[in-house]
Length: 369
Image (cartoon, rainbow, N blue to C red; front, top):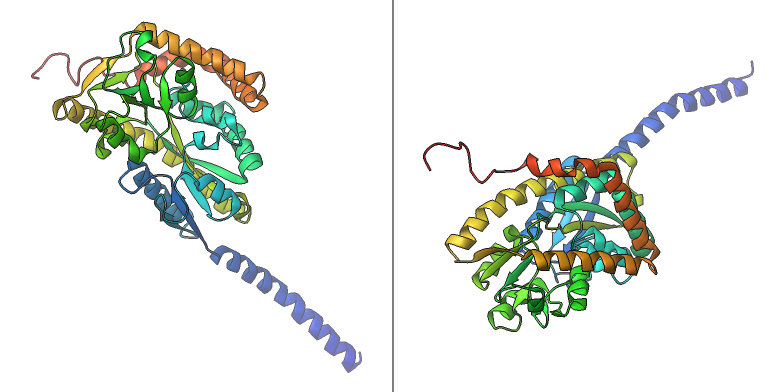
């Protein structure tokens, strides 16, 4: 064998031995790569939904072992409030936190993933989202219309149906009622004769205090109590049958999402689901505590929405949804999914009410109060 051939074989053997080392080094480099996402919430730091966002940011960092780091800002610090969804899709932000109803301009049906009169309760919504096709529908909407990947991260507990300073004794009392409402609820109540305005969260308490509006809908009591809703409200109206649930989600710029390795995506999806479930339990706890404060310290009165009003609003809502679905194929898809979910799980829905029922007492039936 010539020296030239021996030299060539040594070179080839050396290269072959180096291949596993190169591959191992490549995997190590990929595993060491980190990403920093900069994003913004639609609310300010005093709002508990911002606190929920901070918790989710912490979970994302922990679930990814620090490979995805979060730089989280409150409303207006980077882009104007309520522009987070568009900004994240355009890449101005890496992510935004908001309610699905803000997607109305491009994806009208996204509002039905938030608070919609007569729709799903918080637990129903979570079950539908993960087991009834809701997650796939929402991801498809957000990918196609906003160029973002959605991550549900807050399940807001059942809303106070209405914070009001005027009593609602009949359907007639809705006519001309000056109220703040947004999304689908605002559309339905407008059709029923209410005088509806859309105000951001920061403007609602001053407007109620000055009498600019007589009523408002916005989230659950655990969220609104710390920012003064109970200070300017006489009546807390509850839905006697079922109050629906808003949600919050993070909209991750789709290009940013796609550049993540599969294992990192899986870890973040797990954080999303855990946050979604955790916030429901946290909200129920805080609703209980803040309800006591609202009644005993702020002298609010808890009232049930009269059955006549309840039935009228729920039926008007259903009529409105199906009428809109005739010309909105995406909404038709959502309602079809609800129909299938109801068929699959409807026989078991009543048992959900027993899972967390207090039975009008805490602890023992007998015993010291």
